[in-house]
Image (cartoon, rainbow, N blue to C red):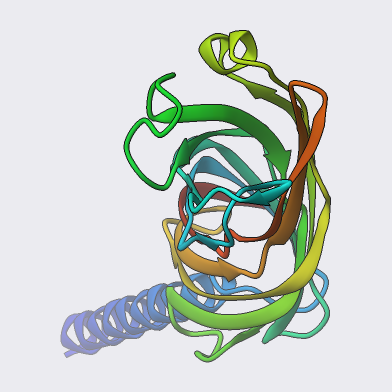
Length: 238
């Protein structure tokens, strides 16, 4: 009889221990799920690739009179970087940076000066600050967001092709641009620290160009670049 009681007691202890381990495992899993989401005070860094794809339009080139030819800007892909700080569990402020983008600038019609379709190239940096709102709660590994902010684009290293320089074109210069920006994106948590991100931005970039053609001043009074910026990055939470 005593042996039977002891056996029952041992079995009850085993069941209780097993139940406790199960509850602990579930609690740990729940804690891990909540730990993967962002929260107030988090600092995140993303790095990957960004493509600037202009949705461009421009006025015509003017040198004394309207030449009847406008310009177009090609796409370019570079290393994209951004850093963000969470002001609350659902709101962060993000700064977009990148290695300089270099774009071919082409004539709007084929070879109007007999120098080829490409007019020249320009390089720019588009630092952008956005405030983003995250929709999902802390239990979700998938974290979609939407944001809006401001952009300041700095143009430099503007130059004509050698063929256009030989034809008398020089002193190309583009004005810096200040405009609005908007984006949608999503982070997906791989673990407590690492995540992947994809985003699409629209940036308002409007500029003007000035140049010289055989001693005469020339200009393009309105160049609306207004690119879509597509990014795929890997992120880390500090």
